[in-house]
Structure formats: structure tokens, C-alpha cells
Length: 219
Image 1 (cartoon, rainbow, N blue to C red):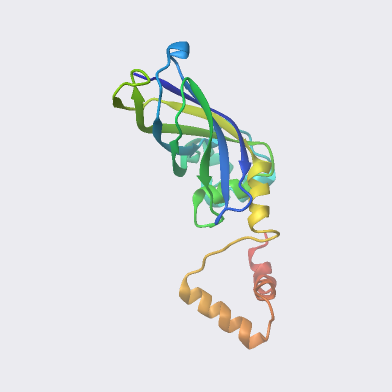
Image 2 (cartoon, rainbow, N blue to C red; image 1 turned 90 degrees about the horizontal axis):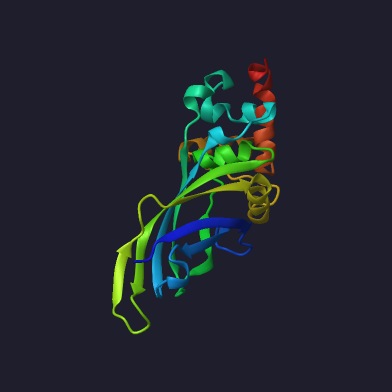
């Protein structure tokens, strides 16, 4: 029965997907080595988690992470592993080892905790844990009957994703922009405010509102 191990060798943005996406270069290796069985397919599932405690944060990053983790003095209690995303892949036939692109869908929705976390970082790396599951289809030999085996639940891999890779991807899909989802009634009020003042862009409407309330929030 195959015993598969997983290792992430790199990551890169996908230029022309329907939505922001990274491809993780995933090395899959059968621990049997030269005695590996033919594997016609693997139905692979992966949960990707962010490990915030595995890096340091500068003053600017700490300020932008207030919304997510609170004051840095409380981070001993609030910094916890968080879910980033789930993904899946059907791995093509191989024997022994193979290198595949694992698609990782991303979002720029600031209602999502992972987006807030990535946005807050200036540089460095994001510590990730990839937890694998799924089904292995294999044969005892070239003419053998197809057999099925689950991927062992303890199979996982660590990877440190460079922050510039995430920023490059978002700049590719949203150049010099950010995406904000508003509740309908809030959008209606903002739309009416913009229309009544005759402001041509949403940026000008937001800047006008920010200027009006700036003194209230400045220390």
C-alpha cells in the first residue's frame, strides 16, 4: 500500500484565473522508493492553516493587526492557528514521485480573517501548515486490479510563503486597489451622500468622510 509524503517546493501567482489564485508546487513522494506501486490517481484534499506565532511583527504590522488580534500585550492569548482555505486536486498517474501544482484560491474580502492578516504584513514570510487527506488509487503491478487506500490523517507539510508573492498576486488582480464588501443599507447611504455632493468617484466620497471624522479618531 502506498505511503505518500508531501513537500511544498515553492509558490507563484496564477496570472489569468477567474479569481486570485496561487499555485503551490507540491512534491508527492511514495516512501517505498524503488519498490513503489503504480498510482493511477490520487484524489487529494488539503486544508491550509496560518500559524501566526511563528514569526515576528514590526510596529506597523502590529497596528494593522489590532482588528484581528487586539493589543500586542494580549497576543499571548489571542494569537492562534487560523484556517486560511481548503483546496483539492486530482493527481495524474505517477510512480514513485511527482511534482504537481496545487491550486490555492485567494480572496481580497476584508471580512475574511486571512485577508486581514496577509494585508497587515509588510514583508517576510507567512508560516503555513498544510493538512492532507484524500484517496489513493493504486495497483499491485502494471496489470493488477485497482485498489483504494485513504491518505493517512497525520500527513502534513509546513511551508513559509513569502509575503511579496501574495502582494504580487493581489496587485496582478487588483492593481492599486482594494476590495470592500458593504451591507446594502450602508452602501445606499454612501451612494446618496456621494450623489448629493456631486462627487465623481467613490474615493472622493470616502476621503470627504474621512476628513470630516479625522479629528475624532486621532489620539
